[in-house]
Length: 349
Image (cartoon, rainbow, N blue to C red):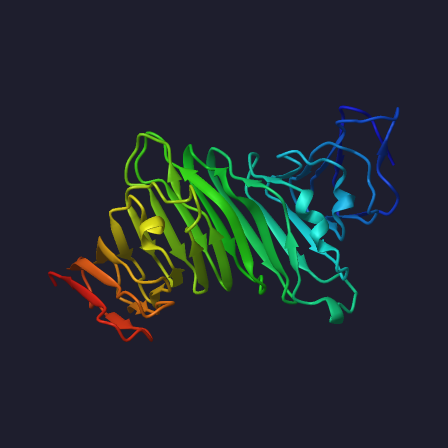
């Protein structure tokens, strides 16, 4: 199939398989692009497609097993989500080839599925990680949803870089059926003149977030929310990654594992447990710290847990500003962990 320089080829219909190479007329480089539309599935099987434009997944499903099927572009917008699903289904061990493919959400929300090849055995290649390159939100409300099976994991982003998101909306990462490890690197930036913008990380399984939550807007009260019943490990002990949002760390469900409170919470006012029916837990795994950040049980009717699991028996974990219970309903605060030092929580109940 030949594409014309500067043009976009749109695929629709219920099911299309392109087995041959997708090249271009005229030789040399080209900005020809592909836009997958319609509710069906487009399968690109050739691993050496030569077009260098954007691949947009507008609707339905776009399925590949090798990054070369997505063309040659290494631009920040090489893969553009627009409400469709990009499927990476492979039995190959060369899934690292996707590390040159960057994901952009400037058009709309998107979903990425990772797993074994359709009809393949995949027995010897389970539990792999599909490693993408850079990742950016848009200056509007955007959510990236991650799904998968067979132990496949997902990673994207670059530690220390801005993932975008600042603007008129809320942004989020959601893991649903993916049962491998999800790793997100980079710093989402939220906020504009309106207060209360939010970055939400929802986990059904295990995930790692290597970054801080930043703000550049004049609005106050921006929030980082941990949702979902899974575990999120938040690593911020990296240069330039301390959070700068000013409202709260908001617990809705699951476990958030933190090794550096000073960097993670940064300029936030404190930690708020907003879990309603299921438990929510803060698992501290650092070397011990003393924090004056406020701990609040707000909409909480499910149990709130704080675990002191220091990595070394050097310093205790101390919270000096527990604010007690706010709002209606019975509150449960459970303190635990393996650390045997004089860990402390104090304040007015």
